[in-house]
Image (cartoon, rainbow, N blue to C red; front, side, top):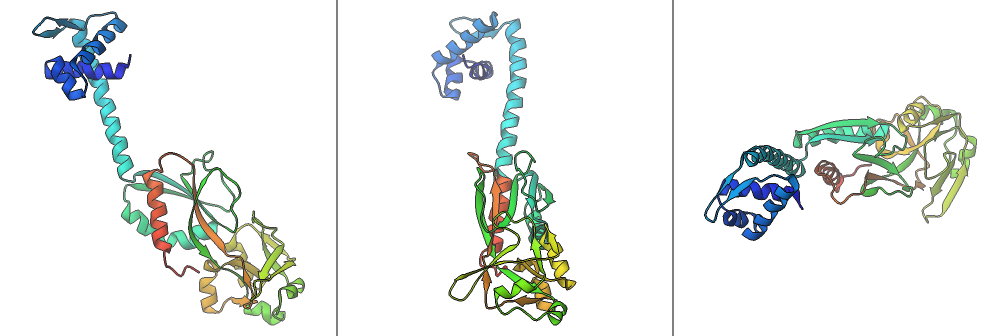
Length: 302
């Protein structure tokens, strides 16, 4: 027996005054309504309705049970409406994980506009450069900038790409002649990113105009796990760093940093939104992804 269906049938019978009207409202026959209530009475071991050929009346037990079941059904209907509203309009807490540099330099640029559009969302942003477990750590979505994604059960949505550049300060290059080829980096102090899952941090691969690769095993006095630290070190004249273009955009424009080996390129990094698989993508995650896609569409990010 479907007890919930039987409760709804009982309520309709009482409120509409007949089995026929209750059946019409529920989209079933009056005989099915009658059977559901009989099964409910058998389960309870109590008579809920006194029936005659023309009318019915609630018994004392039926009256008590009807009142209790109406409260239950009202609460369930309210819960259904709340979930439907939640699904229709993004609301609640949106927990985001992002790399430190991206969170400080990029999310800071467009997250205020996102929160203005979706005022019922509360953003919980956690920035670090380690790979988190979205489910275990309780994140709704992670934004990751990488060359290659590791195998995962997560859904990945590509948002944008950023060029990678080799940069150094004019002061550093004044002390050391600027490299003309990637192999010249062997005599330079290179600043290493120590959380690169796609490649070894001390192995840099440049591509010439014909897209031929030039792999260099570099060395350096500093390894850091965030691009912000590498930028700071490069500004201080500690060496040559490879970094996503958006991290050093302002410093390149001001001349505090200059591009090294401009005739060569590095593999770009792609920005992904990652979220757990599921039949339904929550409106709050969909809202964030759609906003980010729109923000970066046609934008000269790097």
